View 1 (cartoon, one colour):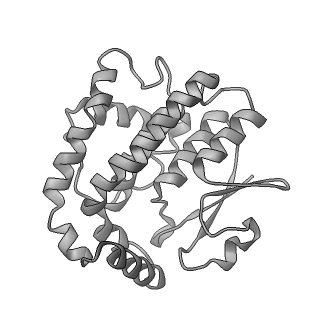
View 2 (tube, one colour):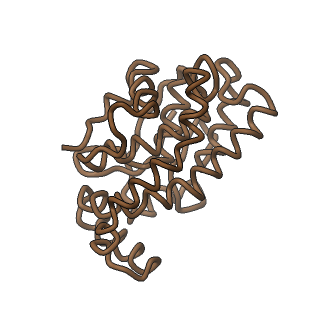
Length: 226
């Protein structure tokens, strides 16, 4: 298997969507070869018929989009399920939408400037131009609101804290894809920023720490920002 994913300087993997797929593959016990791709290099992924990563190439099969990859993995490799049946998949879809539509926009102002500084020059210029056009504001201006963005993000995680009071993982006794979705949102700042997003005594931080060591420590093996 080959996983085409965004790559930063020093080989860092910072994409939340890439981390969802990485954790899903590790959950299944499936080995893969990482193929880092620059944001500005569309030719490298032209074979997929679209312009976004992550992309999983499994033999002749090509699947893009982290959610579709998770569905493909569960259908093709049913051992160690990611969803636990159709009901589980439907509920996890809600978590996926919540993460993408609520949590990522809250975290965005706190991380994008630091994220851009950890990219090679062509990608940094490309992404900065796209983001500043979309927001109508310089990234430095967005970063000035970091403290408020971090607080809002931490408050938004209250449903996760409430769940963890009753069970060790969002999916119950062991982690599965819903856990990996939220995990990806904490792995992003861990890789991109040296400043912690959550205090060490936060229940979500403790849960994240356990997941860093899951599946052979694939999450912790990625160097934290310094």
